[in-house]
Length: 331
Image (cartoon, rainbow, N blue to C red):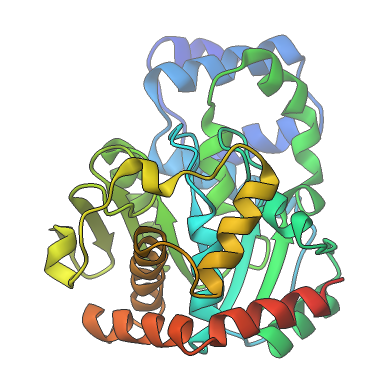
């Protein structure tokens, strides 16, 4: 570690293999906390590069609890978090809209860090019991078109850095790695990011990993498509800035997307969306994110067709039926 730190202090970079070896050492408890904290600080100041991120990712996946879902072609829908907007559970709602449209969703999530309610919070509010049993998760997919993978159950090696991250109280490259270490290795991903620098980094990473993807960013700083302003989408095939009106949506006010003050508030909004009882702003925000998730998974479809599929899933009640079946199966 000492040699690595000396190189990094001199503005050197790591190869994918060096990053892999370094993270492997961290996840096996080989380095003192002070050295790990110094390492995190270096990358916080200069940012991690594509090969470094991929090397770190590979090492974390090597220590994961593996999940084999067979030949089921899945998509993950996730935001990086950390935008400080405290929106309701937009990406998790979108998961059930996409599942209700007939696609298979393997959602990798955790408790909220900068919002009242993360994906795991809203699942717990509905009585969902988390599992890392591969057979159970596969049956959940087959039965409900949806499986939920609670991150702490699959990444035991993260315990070696938990106390350091808590003590630093700032975002580190581990926050960047979270969306990249879904243990079932889905072939498609909708990834929401809070700024354009992250967008470019993730796009380059996902291109190199040869995944189907759409990386989205609302240009006013949301890590999802919020419809509060212009938004940018980058996929394997195109890079475009949209106005909400380009796709038949209206611009919404920021306050309309609040997640409330408690996890119970967030769960109530979640239910209202899936039961078609939410505000137009809440519903539209979920629909637009679900639409680009569908296109990420089925890139041959025009985005307008994807919007139609998402809207049909929600308005027909299939999204809510999918959710209630999922909750029943996972209790």
